Amino acid sequence: MTSATIKIFLVHGDPKRLRTAELSNWTGKAVAGPRSEFDGIISRDEAEGSGIYFLSGSDPDSGQPAIYIGEAECIRDRLKAHLQKDFWNHLVFFVSKDENLTKSHIRYLEGKLIEQARAAGRAQLVNGQGSGARLPESDRADLETYLEKVNQLLPVLGIELLVPTAVKAEAGREIQILLCEIKGLQSKGHLTPNGFLILAGSQAVLVERPSAHKYPWAMNMRQKLKAEGALSVENNFLVFTRDVEFSSPSAAAAVVHGGHANGLTAWKDRQGQTLKQLEAV
Image (cartoon, rainbow, N blue to C red):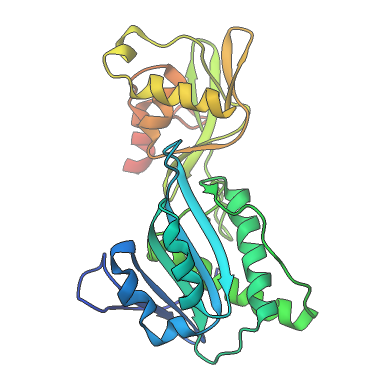
């Protein structure tokens, strides 16, 4: 992504309440806020326009993050219909200040964003199928720029569910792969902006440590990953079937070890230097 300057306006002075966001040299605009601010959000002039919107929260049955991605020719009218859904507690919508977003444009954006959310795999998609639209090549190019700006603003406004877990290396900078080895097994991963990513094919011990029952987070997480199919049994160990991101190196190492672990010493580079030593350089 290109560098950008973000202007955020806190309507009530509170960063958790109603706020607007804009990027320099961009005709788009975002409005965001909690569900408790719903009336204030839809009463704004921006809500009269066409655009795309995101409703985020948790699935009431699974407790997993959930998101609804939609499009509307009148944001205000469409959002009112979503009050019957109780999973969401946060809202963000995007419009164009020059009012150049047509029905075909917003349908195209919705389809691309749903694809992106599905690929990221961070949340349950409440609406898994976007309407999509066929557009001329020039329009698609313009909307790809719009999508880039949307993706720059979403995490700033509290929605990270579309951020891919596999981070691409920046130009001129390689991702440093780290190893976690235990009982002849090996896991591979790397640091990410959100924590630590264990790569598909990595291995973990089959049986948890006795201490895992006293501090059950790792055991519970392993059970969750097994239920999701992200961890599978192979011979006498576990294998990650897909990339899985954790909140920290220690959380990742704990799942590999089957119990509490210090990620700063458990993860090492190929020369044997620990993450703690690498960060001290």
